[in-house]
Length: 271
Image (cartoon, rainbow, N blue to C red; front, side, top):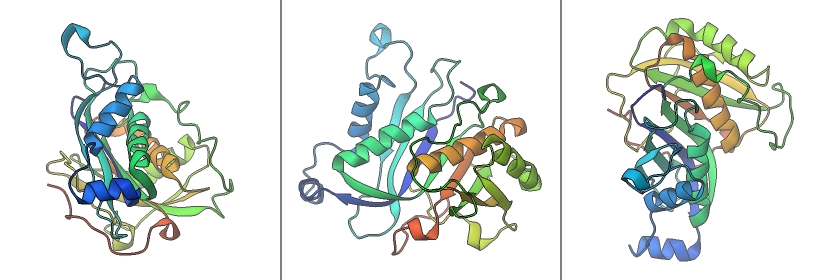
């Protein structure tokens, strides 16, 4: 595993709790929170284990750190779920488990209700060159067209501890286009453009001290979904591989029509 720092994934959108879950949650009597649900789901997939020492199975992809989310039922776009894991002891020949982490998080959210996705974020080191692009195939079951001219426009923003990304926006854009076999068409956004900043600040713990804002991108994609958003984030992390191994925050915001109406809850840029 290329980095010993925690990996964090988050889903932003609106969550509609099932009536019985909402009653229990609002009364403070809900037995299972998002932490417990994600642990149970990850263990069911064989991704993690609560066993210690010799009883811990080999091949676990991560150890749980924390999980949570804002489930306020007011229609506001919030960080409805985040998951932080430690993947330092995972098998070294395995890619960072970004997609599995989002799968576990989505399964847990579906257990308590239904949700819409307005955006995602991933805090992780760039994917090493050895990861290649063969595992970045476009989600095969995604409905919709295949043309970036008629698809959805999303925005992608980057932040990290190391500088220099802003000057490499065009190279990053070209690398992402090549990795996606033309499925993603990027245009670097103007520096500090307020129209292309990630509109949904993470509310979970983000360990990214002294972060430097990187470039933003307009990104046309054939369709929009959680899988597509995660795929875009992973593609960007692969494109960043030549520029170091420091943790990078990749944020992907969906098209305006895909974002639930209403205000956005957040606590600003993380420390």
